Length: 126
Image 1 (cartoon, rainbow, N blue to C red):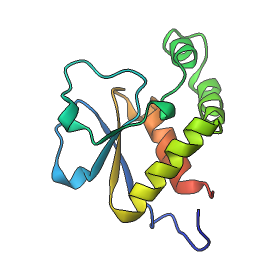
Image 2: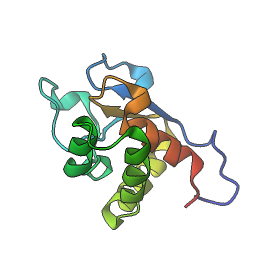
Image 3: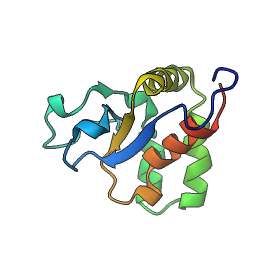
Image 4: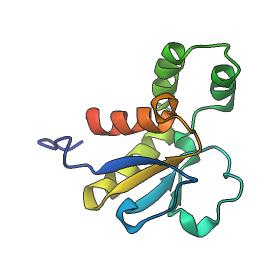
């Protein structure tokens, strides 16, 4: 992040992909590994699979093998991979110019990687 950039400089929101698209969403960025069922391609501007959790990590969480407290640091550690860092830089660049909405299929935003990613984007300096 550039020197002097504040949390307000980046405009990043989150939303469930199954909610209706509205102009206020700005640039709609899908952060799921697989394309969501029933969603038309024109409802998404960018698809950044690199920001989705690894399949094994997501499966372990959904199957109850790990808790949310265990999932969170593992997901965030995955954001240090070179391909994830490149995708994060892309989202930051977009969010400096206009609002970006991170999209995922998870029903509960409190237990979804899109919310972790939003916080990471807004809080971390790069």
